[in-house]
Length: 218
Image (tube, rainbow, N blue to C red):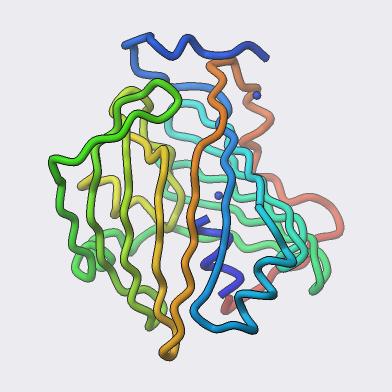
């Protein structure tokens, strides 16, 4: 579950929100809220509160940063051209890393259904189109309602490359309902700020920091 939250989960001058040019480089801040049909789990999520994530993106590369009591500090770096990703975790299990190749896009697409709808919503000045999505991942059924804009390029992660084969642009808001052993977990993610700024290439360096040991089988 920790990986799922991270994945569904993973900022100098403001972007002019009326601009029509597609944004290909910048920083996105998002807020994530979790709840559940299970009262005990719901209470735990309420104690955690909102989770703020920061995503740096530039061309085919992205870096997501998130910090919360459940996962600790997590950084995910993705290079869509080389189809590789590095995850750094500094939390309850110590400092761990995972280096992976994204080679299951076609397999993920087989378990995914994406329907573009006529529903629209304006978020931070961007007109977004709604998509209804269902998929299976790690033995769990996931249903998503996504509002995406084509004015921001897709920001890839290892988990969503298959999704963006069928969705145009970047999701400004997404509600995911995950059924895990009869319990629903609802995760709502909404973009709260977009800044069209230059991002240093250092943000996407996949060199493993000193002190991290490899984690396998997560």
